Structures are given as C-alpha cells and as structure tokens.
Amino acid sequence: MASLLCPSSIAKPGAKLFGIQNASGHVEFLDEPITVDKTFVETARQGRAPEERFRFASNCIKTGCGHWTGEATGCGLVGKIVDGMNRNAEATLVTCPIRDRCRWYHQQGATACASCDEVVRNVRVAAVLA
Ligand code: SF4
Image (cartoon, rainbow, N blue to C red):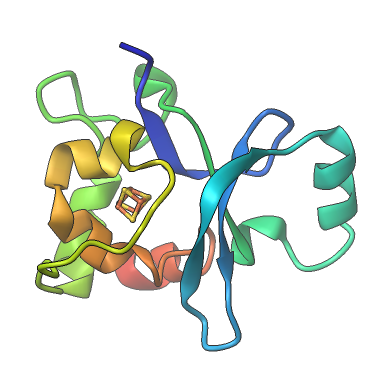
C-alpha cells in the first residue's frame, strides 16, 4: 500500500493541494488534489503564507516528524485537534479527495473529518493546541 498522507503538510514542490480556505475561514475541499510545482510554491509565498490559505498533503514521514508518537499510536497531532475542537462525527462525511490515504482519517475516522475543515496549518492548529 502507498504510504499514508499527512493532511497538514507544508507547501513544497510535489505536495498535493487539496483544500482552499474560503471567506468564512472554512476549508473547501477540491474534487481532486493538484500536485503543486516550484513555481506555484514560489508564487504563493509572495503573499500570506500558503499554509494559512491552502491545505497540502504529502507522504507521512513518521519518525521524521515531531508529531509522530510511534507505529502503534501514529500521529499525535490529530488526537490533539480532535480533543481541542470537541466535535462529533457527522453521519455524512464531507467529500475529501485524499481520504483513502489520509493519516488522520486512518487513525480517527469520521471524527477527524469533523474537525478538519477549520484546520489550516500555522494558525488554527496553533490556536487549538494553545
Ligand atoms: S481528516 Fe478527513 S477531511 Fe481531513 S484531510 Fe483527512 S480525510 Fe480529508
């Protein structure tokens, strides 16, 4: 199986753009992820940090990430977000183009998705974890 994807990746060439923050601050998920290139990343970095406006996914790097808590427990960030947001899972999942490979969904299922549309790296994650 292909490696799971971290749904809170930085903007970097090869990352998959899969969500865009709308005017109300919620993330709208794309129908299909778009693999971004160096030009996209350089252009996006000329404005507000792209991680505060977009959602990117990249391969979960496990031990290379500070949120990794081990093979048995996985990513520690999603549990903190779920606890911090304290939302119930929706009966109908929002459409998300990376779900079949999403690390957070793999670990926490629909509860992760219920908390996901307000997460943008750098801003909301910091607020939730404060
Ligand atoms: S937690 Fe759910 S909504 Fe968020 S990226 Fe993963 S599959 Fe998509």
